[in-house]
Each structure stands twice: as C-alpha cells, then as structure tokens.
Amino acid sequence: MRTLHLNIPDSVEMSDYDFSMMIASKLYEEKKLSLGQAAKMVGITKRTFIELLGKYGVSIFSSSVTDLQSDIENA
Image (cartoon, rainbow, N blue to C red; front, side, top):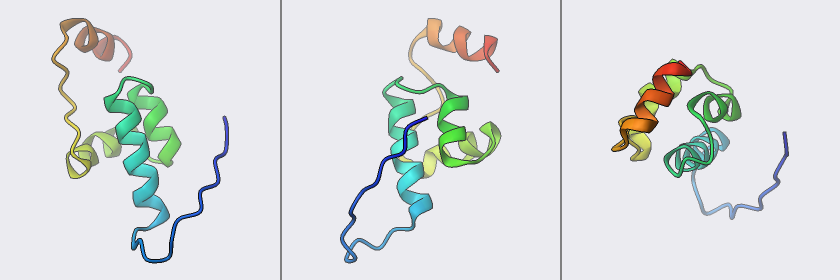
C-alpha cells in the first residue's frame, strides 16, 4: 500500500477522515478500487463504507450487470 502526503490549506475545513472518504468513494465510483479496498483505505468495514457512500455523492448501484454480478461474487 502506498502512502500519500497532501498539503491542504488550513482554510479547507475538512477532517482527514472526510478527505479519505472523499478520495476512496471517488476511486470506488471510477472502478479503480473494489468496495473492500476502498473501505480498507479509510479504515472502516465494507458495510459502513456502503452506508456512507451517499453522503459523498456515490451510488452503490452500478448500471452494469457485469459489475453487479462481480460485486455479489466478491461480497
């Protein structure tokens, strides 16, 4: 696993957790990370990650039947 260090201006009022969730949810949405990988990146369970996705503007539901089948198989 890689570690990335970002210099975020103090004027941006977001917690490290929110930044992690924002990045992980976007990577999940773009299919760069699996659900499990994204949850692990943030340090939470898959279930919790699923429950929080909507807060970050990401739907758990895919428009692809193949993606849905893959998610079910990897659950």
